[in-house]
Length: 225
Length: 250
Image (cartoon, rainbow over all chains, first blue to last red; front, top):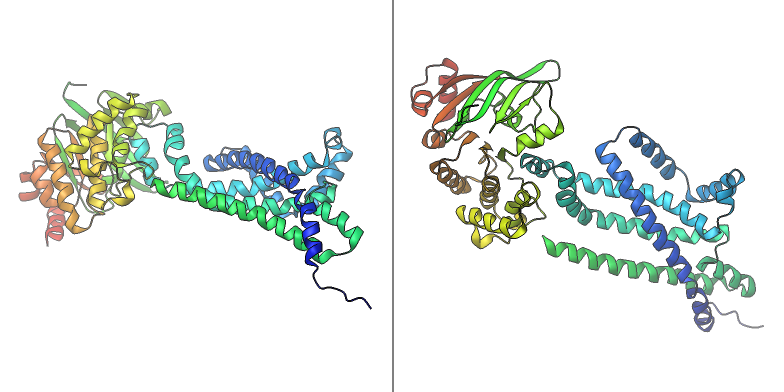
C-alpha cells in the first residue's frame, strides 16, 4: 500500500505559484474597495460630526443595516436580489458587484473609526480657534483633520485588514481570485491541506505587507509631534 | 462709541435651560488701557460673562460691543460672531494650544488664516511675540514637549499677536502647578505695563491688587461692586464681598 504523505512539500511549492498568481485580483478588489469605502466613510463621519439633519438619520439607518447583517447575505441580496429589478446591477461583472457591496459594507465601519478620531480632538482647541476668529472650515482643515488622521490610522488599518480577508468571499459570485484558484486546484487533486495552506500563506503575506505600511505611516505621524 | 471705549456690554442675560439664570442684567464699559480683574465665588457667572464676550457662550439677551463691532443677541448672524471674535482674543485655563502645531506656528496661525497675512510676515510678527514671552529658544517645540507655564506663555503670545482690542483671560493660572504660576503672572504683568486692555477672571487676589486698574466683584450673576483695587480689596464695603475676601485670604 502506498504511504499517504501528511504534507507534501513539493506539491505545496507547486501549487503556491498558482495561488499567488491570483493575488492581483485580491489586491485590485482590496485597493478599489478601500478607496471607495474611505471616501464614503469620511462623508458619513463628517455628517455625523455635524449632525446634519435628515442625512444624519439616513446614514445611521444605513450603518445599522450594514453592521447588523452578514456580508454574505448582503452580497447575495445585491447580486441576485436587487438584480431582479435593476438592469444596472444585472449588467455588472461579478468583480464590480463585489467591489460595490464591500465598499458599502466597509464604508460603514470606516465611518465609525473616522468619527471617533474627529471627536477625539478636544473642545479646548476648537474654542481657541473660534476665539481667534477662525471659521469652522479653517478649524476642520487646519486643526482637526491633521490630528484626526493620526488617531484614525490604527482602526482604519484594522478595517482594511478585514476588508482584505473579506474579499475571499468574492468567489461566491464567481470572481476568479485566490479562493477560486484553490477550488479549481482542489477539484483536480483533492490535496486540500496543501492548497489551503498556500491560500492562507498568500493572505497572510498581503496582510503582513499592509502591517509594514501601517508601521511606516504611524512612525511618520509620530515624528511630527 | 467713544474713541477710547474698548468693550461695552449692555443688559446682558444668560440662562441655561428655563430655570438657571447665570447672568442677570450685566452692564460693563471697559476703556482703553484698563486692566480689569473679575473676582467672585465660583458659580457666579464670571467665566460665563467672559465667554459671552466672544460668543463661545451665546448670551440669551443683550448687546455686546467690542472695538466698534456691535452684536445683539436677539439678532446675530454667523458672520457677526466671527467678526466680533476678530476684535478680542482669549487665554484659557487649559492653554488650548493647537497640538499639531509648534509654539511659533500656534502664534502664526490666526495671522495667516484670519488676517490673511503672508507666511513670512506672520512669522516675523509671531517671532516678536514669542520673544516677548521669553520663549525664543523653544519656538519650534510642539506643545506636548512644553511645561504648563511655557504653554500658557505661548497661549498669551498667540492672544497678543492678533493685536486685539481686548484680551480675555479665563483663570489663566488655575491649572498650573504652584511653582509655574509666577512665570505666567509676570508675563501678564508685563502686558499690563504696556497698556494692553485686559479683562481677567482670577482667584489670585494679590495679583489682582497688583496689576488691575479696576476690580469687579460678581455674585449671583451680577456685578455687585466695581472700583479700584484699594476700594474693592483693601476697603470692601459690600457684606458679601467682605465674606468672600475673608474666606479666600484665610
